[in-house]
Amino acid sequence: MPSNGHALDLDRFLPYRLSVLTNRVSNAIARHYVERFDLSPPEWRVMAALGQSPGLSAREVALRTEMDKVQVSRAVSGLVAARRVKKQTDAHDGRITRLVLTSRGLAIYQAIVPEALALEERFLAALGPAERVALNRMIEKLSDEARSLAAVPPGYGIYRLGPAFSSLAEGGAGGPRSGGGGLPREDSAAAHGSNQASKKARDRRSRS
Image 1 (tube, helix red, strand yellow):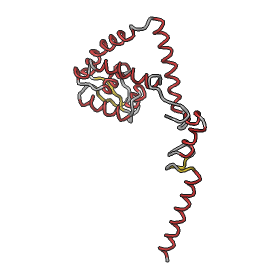
Image 2 (spheres, helix red, strand yellow; image 1 turned 90 degrees about the horizontal axis):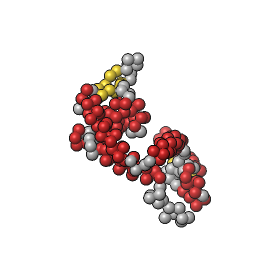
Image 3 (tube, one colour; image 1 turned 45 degrees about the vertical axis):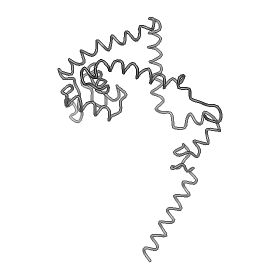
């Protein structure tokens, strides 16, 4: 535990709680399609995105689903191999590949959607009408705020915790004022100068 008493209580840490809740709901829904359709969760997310918005590019799928490019690429490759998704060249830009569900993919999508919606309704039954409205508003607000977190610089939280933690960012490996490798900028510059001097000495010996 940090010496100034700061500790992370996972049972109260909202990002952790949201992650656990999301995983529980996703896993509950996944049980209804993983074995039945031999479909992985990333593949289902791609199909769900294309079912709502046919013709997305792989990049647009990644943005909509918040999956990384590698996950999307693997999911698309699997879906294309299984003939559930097909690729089409963009009508206006030949450099862009569009993705659409095949008739086989659409049939699977239409079989899963009713079950997913029924599970969602079962899950939300714990909330009253007003609570559902409030939940949607809070999710929208937090989603907007989450997008802004990408602009927060590394070390932001450490500096806010006070001097006892600032030293970690000052001299720690890769800290905001570090020159790399855990060295403060001054030491890093000195090391660089020493390396340059050694190189010049070697060059002079090689010419003599």
